[in-house]
Length: 196
View (cartoon, rainbow, N blue to C red):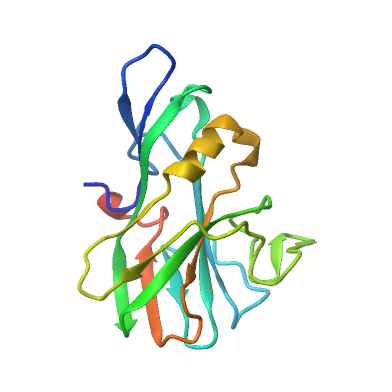
């Protein structure tokens, strides 16, 4: 089971279906380091958090959003048909009530070590605080009892395969920004390889 990463099954034209796992320092190869992640807490609008070993999703009236991007690179053929893609995150700490989380396709380029609530990268503000997104694709409940949270991102990953220059990643937001919960996930920077 992949606890942090993107798992996708795809088939190139006239080729057999195969599964590819994207997980920093683990897969598709042990030298894969093209996962970017950070979180955007509204309480610290100018502070970047890209080097943290955890990312935070939360509500409580002061939301925190999670940004993730997986570079598919040469691991998926350009004309592949993605039959299934799932994003898995392993929660390190969950506090508060049962809540929901929505995922969105990010609509602008961002820099992992410079992005914050108010800017996409150094000197480049978001068009709106908290990041630029397209319409929500899916939501689902997350609870303290779950050992892994997952989201079906098939449609979005198919779009990235077709238009790799538009792969700005995925953003997780609380379904209700007033809900009293906070979930800290292991990030791709964690020293614990099995949780990346």
